[in-house]
Image (tube, rainbow, N blue to C red; front, side):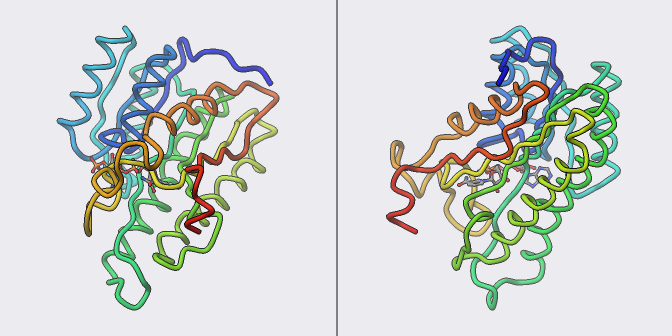
Length: 247
Ligand SMILES: NC(=O)c1ccc[n+]([C@@H]2O[C@H](COP(=O)([O-])OP(=O)(O)OC[C@H]3O[C@@H](n4cnc5c(N)ncnc54)[C@H](OP(=O)(O)O)[C@@H]3O)[C@@H](O)[C@H]2O)c1
């Protein structure tokens, strides 16, 4: 399997304003990629973009984007191609978990998870595919352990991640022969802002050293982004070592 750096590659990261997305921007920039940062919180994106541009000497571009809005997502991809002349890597990372059990989940929580985790990834993938095909590029999805095993604590969140893996591998099957690589990265618990919409963020719930850090997941994403034809790594599981004792 051939793995090179990302010098001169152009990457879009959705959900780049915090957690795994922010860490991914930092690692891709360290590897030499020019990075386009997308999420809703403009100031957070600008601060990360300025930071990595200064530290790694790469180009960055901030495009505030709500991934549930297909027009904004089309503009994100169009702005990337206009700014950098193409697109090599899309990281479909924006996502969230709301609520818990089915009976107490309200419809707006249900809808938001479906809209961001599923529709958002579809909109971005659809807009990016022609450019990824041209580049022989890499498409990376943030799946989850919850998308591989049943999750009694939040069946709808789990279902969005099962959907995402099904979509990702079907896109892989449809476009692999055109040179597009697809990888699903499946973390267990990661210390980020995840969970903050309805309770305590995982970065507060878990102490450092207890579960995975965002930078560790970002290294797996960068590995996926570096894959070169004819090979792809379809799934990367990034599990806390004691996960199956808590399963
Ligand atoms: N943390 C974990 O334990 C864990 C485990 C497995 C998988 N994951 C997955 O990893 C991915 C990243 O999550 P994280 O843990 O890094 O959580 P996080 O720190 O809460 O980051 C979530 C990111 O998604 C963005 N986002 C949310 N709604 C959006 C929207 N409508 N449009 C654009 N961006 C939106 C947020 O940015 P704005 O608020 O600025 O829009 C933020 O940058 C998610 O797909 C999550 O499901 C997380």
